[in-house]
Image 1 (cartoon, rainbow, N blue to C red):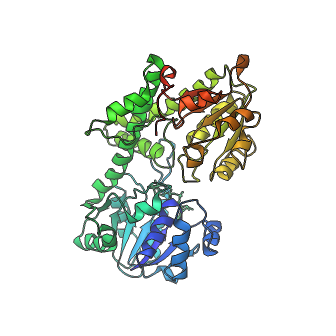
Image 2 (image 1 turned 120 degrees about the horizontal axis):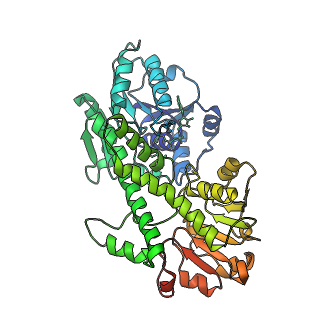
Image 3 (image 1 turned 135 degrees about the horizontal axis):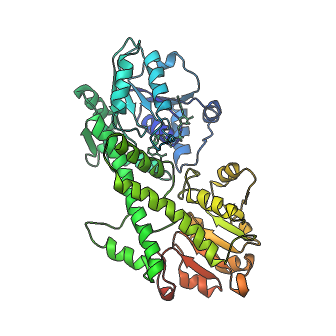
Amino acid sequence: MRLVVFGAGYVGLVTGTGLSDLGHDVLVYDIDPDKIAKLVSGRIPIYEPGLADLMHRNMRGGRLSFASSIADSFNTADAYFIAVGTPPDAEGAADLGAVMAVADTIASVAKRRALVVVKSTVPVGTCDAIQARLAGSTSPVSLEVVSNPEFLKEGDAVSDFFKPDRVVVGARSEDARQMLRELYAPLQLSGERLVMTDPRSSELIKYASNTMLAIRISFMNEMSRLCHATGADIHSVRLGVGADSRIGKKFLYAGPGYGGSCFPKDVQALAALGRQNGVAMRVAEAAHMANEEQSLFLADLVDQTLEGVRGKQITLWGCAFKPETDDIRESPALRLAEALLARGATVVAHDPEAGPNFARHFDGRLTVKERDYDALDGSHALVLLTEWRSYRAPNFAEVKKRLLAGPSGLPPLLVDARNIWRPAEVLRAGLRYQGIGVSLQRVADRPSQR
Ligand code: NAD
């Protein structure tokens, strides 16, 4: 098939590249000319494991190309994919400006019957609204709008594309369903993973999925705060709760709060959708509030454990919102760094991939180091925020050497906001340990959380 993808971000680039690897002829368009210039010269503007090799192979094979201006090559696609951003507006609802702009472009370029496949995360009713917009346009051809939300996880996106848990398609006509069945057939070889439904249900599945995951995280984060207050231990609580097969083990890790370009905005967009439709989304609202509170809790925890952060230097290991990505959107590290700076601390950070994005964001208000241990020199505490593999087994003796002693001669402090270190090992190295919801009376013989 001839496919055009609008948006060369995390979703558009992975989708376009993945589809070209399945043998389709794919053109990826973005309004950002710098991004496209990089892609055309074979450089990849984001960090996503495995994507560069795949992209190069399909560019060499002539199946994948990029454009930053609209040309005749756009006229004859079998399907146009919309993969542009849908950031929150002032009320938390999804801003559909870019999605609608793309719909207008498609209406003006399409010269033959085609599908318009909406991969962007959009509120219920958006596909119908785009369909109505296209019907009111001057487009000379029939264009059917289909919902096909994206479920990829940054850091694992290539593998998620080829081995999805499910592919959700919301389409009204049998023709459209059949075309998407064919398109995704190569991904169904090890079992049917297609969920076929109507566009509105498909749109809601995406928000419901992200919000459900966010709720689990927020619930466990609240439990971690209750552990701090009561002397219970979050590791034991998680193991005991997750052992129930109805609940399951995944997404029960307490931490610094969820971040990224999806959970925070999608939870709020679902709440906004509820408000617009007169349905109170109390659980989603609560998940969002608990997440905000977790950031504050972490800032307070660092502040209290250090007996005040004013005038002190704090090192953050991890700027990305999760490992294996350079994406810092809504990252817990952003929130903690802002809180520490506001309280008068100096912040030094390191991340294996997201350091340059973090430095750009703070524009000189903090320092980002190239090497993890160099970021420790002269700091009063190290806060671990992203569980990158390279942070999992540090040389704690070296960490101790680089950090300054705490107040009243206490050993230097490690705040493990992902609970990945073995507390006993940290203590043995002569450091102080503070986890999230971790009972210090029980650290001696317990393994790390993950
Ligand atoms: P992104 O910000 O990385 O990329 C969006 C791209 O769209 C940018 O490169 C931007 O320049 C481009 N763009 C904006 N307006 C355009 C236009 N009119 N024409 C062409 N390009 C345009 O965003 P993303 O993370 O890829 O997310 C895209 C959508 O997919 C969002 O709705 C998001 O919620 C959803 N989503 C994201 C993820 C994820 O993990 N990032 C996962 C699932 C779903």
